Length: 180
Image (cartoon, rainbow, N blue to C red; front, side, top):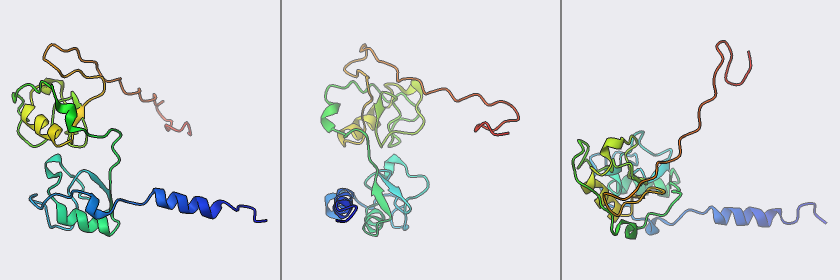
């Protein structure tokens, strides 16, 4: 009797579970980005060797030809978001106004939200002041209310996100690994 009789079955099961979506099941969008047709995927919904170094949310769905070609070549994959983006999550949200200097730039800068179309740097002063961008991206399912955030009105309580863990102290003359 073979020592590992189930190993081929496990390998087939794992390979089937990891199979990517067919390209026709992905909405790649159009080629409206200024960086479209340059050979690199600029859509931040994707990751991999074929990606541009600095994809921005305003290119979501606007570099279709490059992203489709790289997808079909196996050079990029869809990022795995921890939470599905549901446009119904936008119902009843008080998005605020467009008082931020970053309003109307195609990215949501309001720290009450999370998702792939969020700007990387969020400032508390932009809370409730990037309404047009955040509303449009929420309705497209590209952002959603952040964990524990109430957005129904301007007087709704908001919970702060947990603080990141503190970095370990480094003793002068020693590496972080504790080796001389």
